[in-house]
Image (cartoon, rainbow, N blue to C red; front, side, top):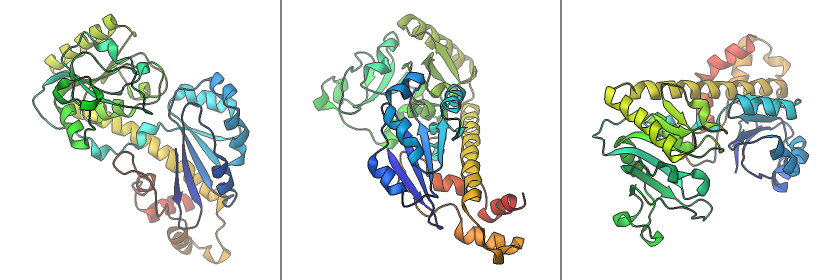
Length: 343
């Protein structure tokens, strides 16, 4: 997945998602020859280990051909791995779920119809079958890369007409319909072991739902704590026991939905600041301010008019945050410029 931000000063920011077996396209390398001063943000959105890069020689070979890469790890484990493998590159912790637009998900008081909601593709790696003992489950299901490996045979298949299991009766749900299911559920469930941060996991938390998850690696555990989630072994029995714990907490009023959401956003803002500051740090090495702008006032004017963070970002606003907007949210650009230039 490849996206780009074109800055007012014609320094592009490329945002690139590293997923399983991701290759760096020749077109991408060619395009970057035009912009030697560009910045490439690479978000690791899947589980990776040493073997990942041994197998993916294309990535290793071409990484040094792209400008100023910033490797964004989804958690501490991946951060340490990337620092070890790519010691000469910029490596930070900035989970890609931290760039979900939190304004698309909120807390909506509503009667609870379902004990649990699972928003998942029809892939076996999602291990949705582990929730079989929790029959009052709402399933939001969809195809991933055209694959249909497992359709839940328990609970309520919301996408299917009359709870059918026939794909002829399946349809996409719109955003509001998904939110309606979230607000009608007590907890969110997700059972894959090795995957990325998983958007649905953060969607649950942003809607104030505690999460039932199996022990996992790859990024979503980065947002979990003893308050907002229960982690269990990857078995039907353990998942059901975890479910009973969360339902007991629900009955006792242990979880404050607003606190769950607030804590998640706090981590998101931290990661956004980390990435924004790293981008600005690289800007300062790429941009030479002309001598006539030596005094602070003119420097600020020059920074504001020529190096302001962005003018366009070609990304689906309904699914992802806008990196450009998140940079702007750090505060007034002039104020940010003052902080930088006073250093």
